[in-house]
Amino acid sequence: MNWDDHYTTHRFQGLFLIQTERFLQTQLNETCAQQKLETAAQNLIDNDTYDEEAIDNDNNDEEQFQIQSAEHDKKYVLVNTRIDYQYRSDILNRMCLYDVFSIFYKKKMNTTDLKYLSKIAGSTEEKISQKGRPPNERFLFQKQHPQATTYLMMKYSESHVPVLYGPQIPRQDRDDTRERYCRAILTLFLPWRTVTDICDISQTWEDAFKSRQHLILRHSWAIIENIQLLHECKKDRDDHLLQVIAEAQTDNSLVDPVLIPTNQVDSEYGTDDSDDLLELLGNLDENTVAMLNPTKKLNR
Image (cartoon, rainbow, N blue to C red; front, side, top):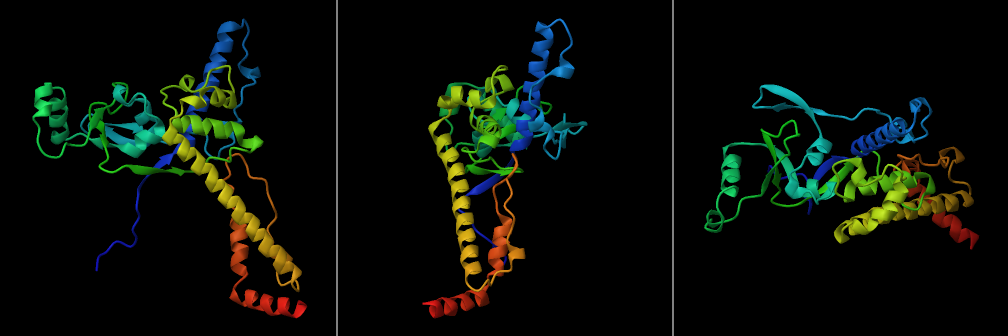
């Protein structure tokens, strides 16, 4: 019948957060190194103690780009969402990364866009006299953007929910990933154009978060709290699965010990998902559960 295969209450937009984090970390490291060179008489590059592990420990050391056209298809340039955000319009200066990509998307300019921009640049009377549904807002990139003359940011008719691709934001209560957590939150929910907008050269990411968290907007805090709530739900799920496994083992050792996963500490870029536990739960099929119930009755 040509109907959609599924329906959702929201629309979604993918966002590669870790690449933007990696860019900011590299920028911070380079700024630290440059400052040390300017204030010292000897070369300190080989002996710098700033943290590069946040970059080098990832599977991919390079920022990813897309090849897109520029200047009316006469040449091609490398772009990504970080560049689109960094060189967004001055009017969007106070918007964070999360909000920009939930409200706007990049599109190639056409005659309709050019007409809209010319009207916006016109008189106030011309804007007031317009009838009907107002067109979606459009904003030009700053001139530093490699596609400033051919692309713009256009407002969605309906806001989208950004979906973070790659390593997810870690739990806020884990000491070993605290720096990554603070860096991710600042990158997503505070406006910036360069790394020094969200982290000073002399600061750790945790210090930067503590000194700037009051600048995060209320609706952004709701999202941050939901991220932590998701982690807590996963933890409760895993605790429940471990309890099921323990009960199954005590009842006639129905679960093969080989199937029980070895607990491993999640890395900085881990997602806290226990796929092994889910797989094990699948092994506890209906037949296994059916066997457990009579055993419990006999014990009673």
